[in-house]
Length: 288
Image (cartoon, rainbow, N blue to C red):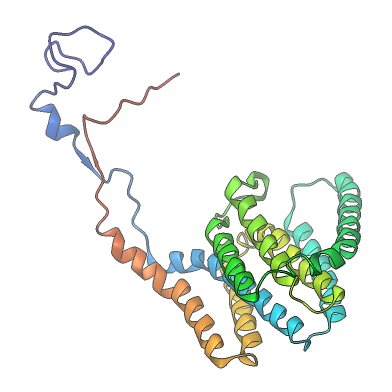
């Protein structure tokens, strides 16, 4: 309060609504009041979740190319997907200490039942998916898949949350739908039903199940988290090494840029952050 003036709008006063006393204006001026300066290496650690997601996309594309060129046996991919599912499920339960032992058996039965139903549904739909875009040109398919994978990477949830607080937001659901749609579109250009089935099964594990596991892996010690990221990035680069050296170096450059150069750019841009707060801001009501 200055004199008989109060900073309230509900009270009739002898001053204009936008009146601010001279001494109060500079005192209430704030610059970047909630700014938390970033540091480089913590940003690098956080960026690993993005590079992991990009590595999964690159691995999926390499698997698709090998299936299309018939250099990868679809049965081997199905066996690898099933094995990866059980390894991921065991890891999930090992990192989940919140569930009681009495609930584990019921959860296991539900998970196995859902997995079997999905397995059978994909197997029955594979002949339909293989002919889904038979009348569409390959150029349109590649362009559509590129747009969908870009949406998947942009809308993915990279936040670090406790397992009990984790939930699928709208952007995360849209990201998963975009990736699965891209995999369905690409699988329609594969030569056999077995190839279609194996690729769609692999895509569901990569884009629907792995993001949930990744959020739990982020709670591991930093060394384990960085090792996981390094293994995935090296694996993605290695898969493209025998396909195209140009693409391999392009993928390696993208992963290195996102991991090391993007945090440095964010640090450089933070110096230009300038948020001013003062008496013109809308008052926030506080309810007891």
